[in-house]
Each structure stands twice: as structure tokens, then as C-alpha cells.
Length: 573
Image (cartoon, rainbow, N blue to C red; front, side, top):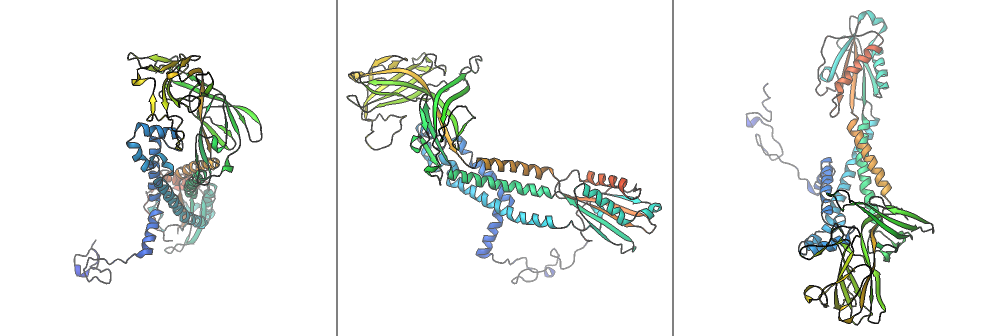
């Protein structure tokens, strides 16, 4: 079909329409209005609040969280961060500059978080208003040509039964059937312009719960983001290593490391106590392929609540203790040899169960002992503890099993300045030997001190004696306080419910139109339209036609015409 001579694609450039005040006939230039500052702000807001942007930010947030699982985080594993700096002295400072050890509080992660928060709210508010208006509106008028819609089929009410059936009564029975199927319905009546005979139709729709579920899903996502943000601001997280027989009191000074939220106050700490009575571990001994693998860890504790009530409890991996509004998780464990140091006169100058940090799966452990007073010189010792000591062909010791089968402790002794009086914080798990003299082990030519439980050995240079009195277990606890955990769970359930609702509830419209014929019969048409993908729409139209045929005021017979799949409707009445 030929186009008008002044069409935009007209072959004659002089006949083409012009755009803008500065373009002449046949000009291809388009003069667009300038957006200005407000226009660019409006454009940016529309881009930010589009669903495409929200989905992109959600994916970006998931990707931004990946580094938090690749490197240790200060909030959860401060000792791991320290060890990472020791193992990677060149890479660690670079990662620290980009906040890789504080991913979830970093500037870039928070920026994505806040943009996603704003984007979701900007999406939800207008969609909620539109959905509310749609819920109050009536179903649309019946299209003039139902034959263009999906599942189109017809039925005929014969003229012989016209006295008991009319277009209005046929549509009323269809409306009753649709209402029983929970459709919103509205009836339209009129007169056919061509024949002057009665026409009636019912317009029905359902599936608005699909959009409701969609809005619930996105609103619950906002709720999760909000709850996590509030919980992080008012919560706290701390770690504490507790040796068997020791008691942890929930005060700020009792933590080995502590990470408060932005709005944390000391009053949020509930005054309770946890005593580690014993720690037990079960290891695999039957299968050679998994020999020595841990099967179970159990920390038996005695708790004292703020009101003074005492109770016993067990803390296991993924089975935290709930006390005083906090969750106490079992993070790690190891051995704490009980070491006693005496001066030449036999007086005890140091005695403690010192936690040694595990270095491998069989709990070969490293620890440090510092004796600042009581001896002629300040003394530091770097020790290795082997729960089941074995010796390689090279003569190097290692642990062949994580349980206490043949425990051995070796110590390298140093004397000199421990650096405790310099006012510089120092880790209890490390010893700065730069300003100290090594007395045993290494290049000194003097063997390292080797102790088994109950053994005593002389310190070099007549400094005194050191003994291994026994070996205890220690447990590393993570104390986590987040008052919004219940809200996060609730919003997570709403996310799941909203998602399932939006996926499995179809939104569709059905129409039934009855037209009186000149011979006294009634012609009935059925058709449907889906918003989105609805593979069962044609089946639903056919089922409606069959059910209505059995419940209409008069017997109906199917027409000889075949159903015609639809195209978008003509919405003229």
C-alpha cells in the first residue's frame, strides 16, 4: 500500500514534514529542547528508579559481597587479618587501602547499598499507587471484536429455546459462573446498531494478587535492607578466647576484639557470665581417607544471667547459645598449655594457660610466652605445641593427629627488651625479636627446650626454670548482638511469599458476549487476554465455554467455527 506524499519516508524530500523551528522543508535535522538542570535531575531519577537499574544494583551488591568471602574480615576474624598481613606483606596493604578487609562497611559497598535502597523505594511508591487505582477501577469494556483475542470460541442458543433464553439472561449466568471463580465482573448491555437487537456482555478479570505479590516482594527487600542497616548500626560483634575453667564476663574490657555499630552504647551490653567447663572434640579414626577429620565440637558452659539464674548449656558449630539478647557462636578451638616459670630462687614469676594458635589441620600450634618481671632479664619464648608429636626424616617435628596422643612442647628462648614499656600496643600472639637475643634454637647451637606434660627444664644462662604442668583446651567465641534478626526473618519470608505469588498467579481477563439474532437465537462469544505469559489461557477460555454451556438458561450447542488465537484487542465498545 502506498504512503501519503507528505509521509516521513516520502521519496520527495520537499514533501517531507519538518521538525523544529530551525529546519526547513526536507531537512533531516531535529531540534530537541534543552533539558536543563531540572530536566537532567528528572532523567537521572527515572533511570535510578527503573526496575532494570534496581535489578542491576541487586546483582552488583551480590558481586560486591564476594571479596568478603575471599579475604578475612576485621569484624569477624581480626586474627585472620593479622595473619594475612604476615603471609602477604605486599598485597595486604593494597587490599587494605580499598577496604577489602572491611567490605560490608566500606564506602563502595555502602554506596551500592544506599543506591539500591533508593531505587527500590522509587520503584515501589508509584507502582503501589498505580496498583491501588487499578484495584478500585472496574474491568474494561468488552472489545468490539472478540475474534481477535486468544481462545476465541462461540456457542449458539437455538431459536427453539429463545422464549427461555435472552442475551441478558445468558450473560447473567456467565457472570455468576465467573464470580464463583473469583473474577471481578461488570455487565454491559446495549443494542446492536446493525440489527437493532439486544446485546449483552460481561467483562471479568482476576490476578491482581500477582502484582500485589510483586509489590510485597520488593517492599520486603527494602525491609531487609532497612533491618540490616538498623541492626548493624545499633548492634555489636566481639570475640573472646576462653580457656577451660575461665569465665567470660560480658563487659567491654573483657573482649579480645570488639566491633561496635555506629550507634552502639555501653548500655547495650547485658551483664551475664559464661564459664567454659570443658571442651571436647571427636575426630574420625575409622576411615583412612578422612583420618583425623573433626566430626563434632562441643563446648560445655555454665551461664549466669543478669538476674543471677545459673544454667548449663552446650555450644556447638552452627548451634549458638542465646543469652542476654546475644548469640554466642563457637568459632574455633585449640590447645592452651599450662606453663610455669620460676626464678633461680624457685619463686613462681609466671604461670598461665597460654592459648596457642593452630597452624594446620592437625593442630600444630604456635604460641608466645612473655615474662616481663621476676627474672634477671625480660624473657620471651616462642613455642610450638604438637598434640601428637611425630618426626619427619629431616628431623622436623609435626603433629600427625589433632587429639592429645603424644603431646610435646618446644620453646625457643629470647632475652632483652619485650617493648612493653614503649606505650605501643602489641599482640599477645606475637613476639618482636628485633631487639632481643636468641638463647636457644636456630643458629645459637643450643637445642630448643622440649617438654612433655609434667616435665621441667632449665632456662639458659641460669635464668630459672620452665615447666609444662598440663594441657587444656580453649574455645574461641563470637558474641553477636542484632535486635533486628526477627525482622530480617519476617521480611525474608515475605520475599519468598511475594515471589511465589508473582510467579504462579496469572493475571487474565475473560469476556462473554451474547448477541440476539433476528431468527430468535442467541449467539454467544468467549475470549480472553493475559498480561504476561499465561500458557493456560486458551484452556481457561475453553473450560469457561464448556461450563457455561451446561449452566446457561437454555441448552447450547457448539458452533462449527474453530477458535482463533488472538492479537491485541480493539478496545472500542
